[in-house]
Length: 337
Ligand SMILES: [Zn+2]
Image 1: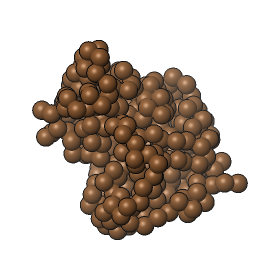
Image 2: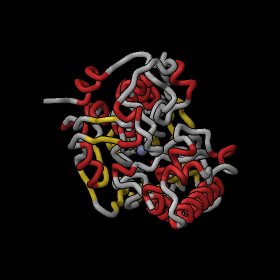
Image 3: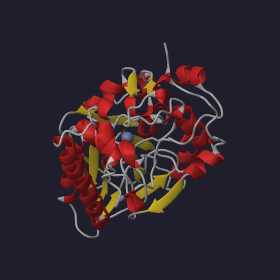
Image 4: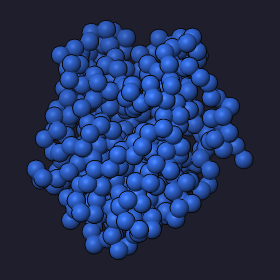
């Protein structure tokens, strides 16, 4: 069977371009020994498509970085914790029913994650929820399943993990995940779990960052994990090749904003812990860019011309801090309208 790991071994290269690193701060890439561009080129590297930031070696870069990054734990409530390493933010809930995790980050960092979980108490790991199919949120699935986690996700997460995937934005191929990494229970629109004396609402937000996104609301804990609907403080990735759209993303953010109060702790897929005020600012940015790009498109501008018009020029000082470049974000918005 062709596993993801076999694939990565075959495609592993050193000294590849870090400029388009996926969702990872430069500091971590530096720690991982990922150097500056060395002339490694892919077919798409020569592409003029402004919606592509080629980085076919990204999975291996993330695995190298994750092996060296200890997990940082932040207490959100007495029983809910934010766990950060390389990859998407993880939330852990503890209690008499055992430990529940949201997302699994990168497989090479699982031992760091397990070290952090051990410090939260001796309950067994019982349940893993995936917010969507992306590698940096699901690569640790098989390892956590082996630790005892039953895996739950939206239907399209299982569908996409079951088959090879290609992400246009990074020109990167992912093989099908092994069976032990696949969600064991799936749902379409939503699911409710009663775990550790709290009610968890798992809500599908269609056609948003991908077609497999959910957010998770801890009703009693007053915590929400948004998955990759939210990149806190930066332009987000919209994965068009997985069914993502800017308007779906805005609708998903609106669903989150309709919940909770000013004390709600909101965990983004990437970036620091936030709240409703920060998520409102992000929503305003998304709507502003969507409106401006829609006007450019309606006036007959090509995607290249829309990017050249720099419609995010006054926003970049605040929002261009992540791995998605302004021109890439504009092109992704354009192509999804
Ligand atoms: Zn993602």
